[in-house]
Length: 509
Image 1 (cartoon, rainbow, N blue to C red):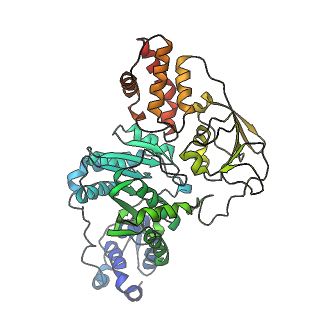
Image 2: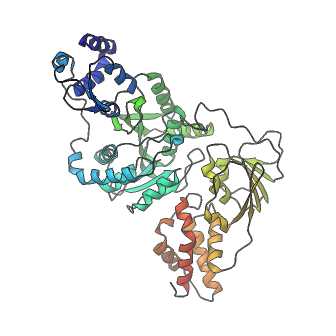
Image 3: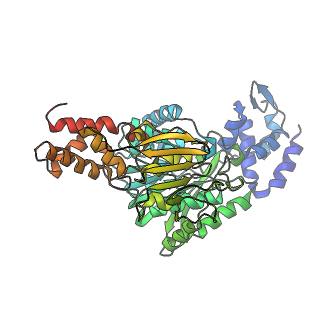
């Protein structure tokens, strides 16, 4: 088409036409472009790029296109000849080419994103630049960084660039936690559904970084949990992006941040780039946020009115209908979760159930799990010593094998019955059961006390330091966390690791 159509589009865009001019410059430089690549390179929404393409005559090669070289002179007066604003760490990237190559391999082999968790993968260069920016802005050797969700593998980038940094990842996706541990870079991993709480061991960090679901509810929750994980004087790095067409949505998100009384120390526009998310230009800004003296009370107030619907898709999307309450009455001493008001039994929230042991020792418990929170099932079962647990609804994921050491589980109409097994025979099984029966206790501490008890039963003496050394040798990951925080792949290997430490008491291997 004639340049006049493009000129009209640029005039309508006004000062914001620079992003369109940047796209037009790339189309006229002789390279072939796919739509997704052009969106990501210019950090411009797919709809805006498509509007430009309708006004430009293109030549095509498969799914790629460009402005014919014979037509480019007609557009020269419209092009953005200056480059986009300078990336604050672009000059450092060439010095870390080996790290980028490693990250490209890690990202390519990582578990695929889950749409119900709003996963969109950041590019390898993005996670490298995050690590470089954190190192340029803060002193990372010896500092503690908390990754609040890490589908993008920022934790691995930080450890590759700053191996002296202490890095912990908290995530709901078991696949991601297992993949990060497989790399052997020394990243600590913790399981958590942030709607139900932050793991106790994920406290006292100097820095936190998060790339949350891009809803006001999701950003507000993830940033609030990040602040919970900080020590005084800490900072939060937040990736968030919105289309240039939807400033009202960005305002809602920024309002949720304002409610937390945070200071914006910096905003780096379009710093993060993604494979996908074309509706927001496959890009997001990077915010550096500083808590104030009023932030902690605001976080507590935010979490008191917590909604579990934080995603853009799936059963826990912000637009989904509230999950119906269980309709059947149950014979139980305690109700966990949301139940009809007419039921008279004592009740407790799911988050409270996971946070601390219940004050009483109920024999029969009934747990209602809303759609979208099923990943919490193993931890909800490990959080009690009740003899009988009824779990609703019926559509629940398979239970991990490790729970067979604690429960016999039977599907029943409308749900699942978990009946606690009697104490096992055998020293190793007794120690394992002791650990799993103390879901809120420090895993290594319970393990240590179990080994000391076994040694005593064998007529020998084992000191606390000797027991700790045995455990540290076979399971260094077990320090400081509880069974409720441990990723399932760690719990899956626990039986064999416990058996190794018990065998070592008698000098066998």
